[in-house]
Image (cartoon, rainbow, N blue to C red):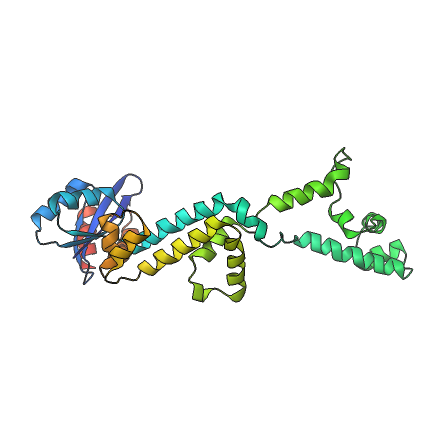
Length: 299
């Protein structure tokens, strides 16, 4: 049971390959490159591999296919879920104009809330007969600011006051702002995607209600939620998941089938790779690949 992963010796320039026993997570070897030829040569020199746990690297898949056509190639479940998450985010963003209409109205900014409260405070004092100068002193505001609050018949007039000189569209400003707010998503596509990808039992009642309201407003979103839930159930290895995956998609690659049916995965390789990067940081600028290889295998 072999685990295969790459790591950077010099980012974007030179990479190496680490090999481990996928069952015991024992380091097996470190190759000075990550191409298909290097892994192919190693596999031919070390027969007996039956299962290869790898990431999405096409080079590793090519090498295993050439040397071990009958070996099971196991795709990493984390990468499968990550790919689904990216596809889900793109789908949510593509239909934002549909589900956004069912969401809550955009929240008022803290500045607008403060302005609204200050308008009420100023007018309450004015109704009590307090003068403008006294109001300015009590709230520590400029006199002209208090006058602006006093002249406004309602707080929205202060909040929506034009920042520039008067224009021809001023009479239609409220109407245009209403159109803009109606077309703006009440929440980001990324946040809705996060709710879709969260286990249902970990959602709060408010999050569950919001998710239901947004997905029910768009048929495509309802379908996407069902697909996400169905695929999430397959990520727990079990006999028969390959058949269920075939029902979930029209055709599936052999690596994906193996990743969902066999208990092996590439998590161990990823963990060893993390330790390898720590060793590389400790050795930064010292010695060469030979010493690095020995430290990795003996670590």
